[in-house]
Length: 368
Image 1 (cartoon, rainbow, N blue to C red):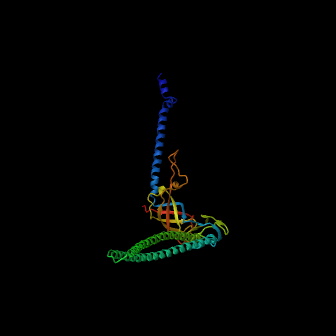
Image 2: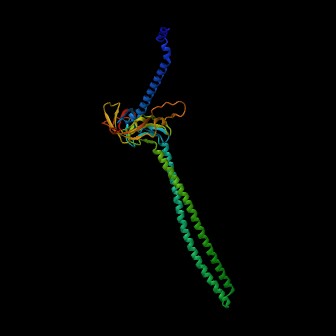
Image 3: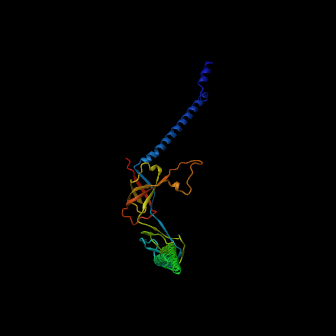
């Protein structure tokens, strides 16, 4: 019996059955611990990765391009293209003729506007002359009033003398009646001449109002002439500034509508760099920091510049359909921000740089 007990105790077949649950629990705990440790390491790496990237002294990107002010040039008046003296990709100066639109219709409109302005000017001159004449008439009427008043005063005195003479028996009734009639006539003449002065004065006011109307008509005619001159000048499409033209989009004899584009103008050699840095690279990047640039078209040539400005938002915010991260599942994507870098030293490539060329940019943040 004792031997059987010892044999049962030493039987290896019964030991794994008793030890398996403990081993499974230990293995499971070990796996969970390893997973947690790995997750902690990954989280720590992610948290500190952005810090490591942003703390680098030199921030590098190859998502950069040369940019320039590309100006579309269009027509401001409609008409048929008469001449195109400027050629594709030509260097032009400010004021150089690019396209000539047939000016005959606009010249005729200008001539008509000038004629209308002349008529308006003549009408105003006539009213001014009438006003001067009316002012002279008013002075003459006022002089007539003074004469009539003098006559009326004399007639009044004569009538009073006849009354005295008749009372004293030295005069006659007929003489008195004649003197009184003359007095009444003189007074009536004073009233008439006064009315003439009032009428002449009011007529001068009417002429003044007509003169204001003539001034307004003259100003309208002058404005029409000025507009016609502007439209005539706009038949000459000229370069707004010096630069290099793009391809011509019109041909001789083609009808050009208002707003129709004829070509484009790039004011070379004024170019700059737009570099799209990751948001994690902007931690210590500031305006004024120096930058080293290389253009893919000219390998080995180093250009110098400095940071001028940062875009107000990332590129995703300016997209036609901005992302809406508040819906559905979310996957974090590193955003990029445009940084404008101006060129301080082009290493002799000033006349060869063109907008759109690829650039590699490195910004020195000064971090130690």
